[in-house]
Amino acid sequence: MAKRHVTTTVNGEPREFLCEVDQTLLDALRDELGLTGSKEGCGSGDCGACSVMLDGRLVCSCLALAVEAEGREVETIEGMADGDRLHPLQRTFLEEAALQCGICTPGFLVAAKALLDRDPDPSETEIRYWLAGNLCRCTGYDKIVRAVQKAAVEMRAEA
Image 1 (cartoon, helix red, strand yellow):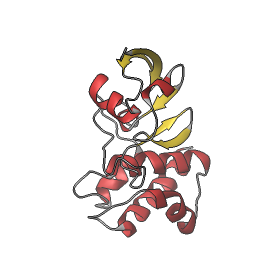
Image 2 (cartoon, rainbow, N blue to C red):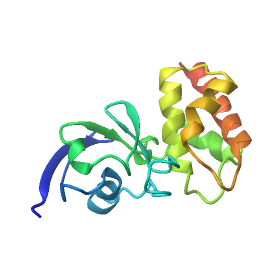
Image 3 (cartoon, rainbow, N blue to C red):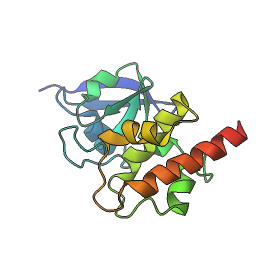
């Protein structure tokens, strides 16, 4: 099978790679571009560990094909920090101990950022609903929700 050439934008930077037509976006990010932050937890779109933004829409990259990134914008966990300066969500996840093994953390962070980009003042119920597609087997959800709430307050104060 011939490989396809894909030209896309990843975390604001133009990127190109070759991929098989049936290769997932997750595998292309990890294997072709060396962006290993997104994790494969289930491979079936049930856990959210591979969550990325594709043209501003939250998607499970294990369910999207790499060729679908052609001409589109992809945002991954690697694009959240500004150099050495952590995004407020990353910092509050650390402060609130909202992570343990780290498999789910990138997906939760990308999903939480997507929520706060849409709604800077979500209720606890809205946060829990928005993050329902992400599963954590270690930390539990209360610390994650608290971290998102804390980051939302900080981000509103900075705006």
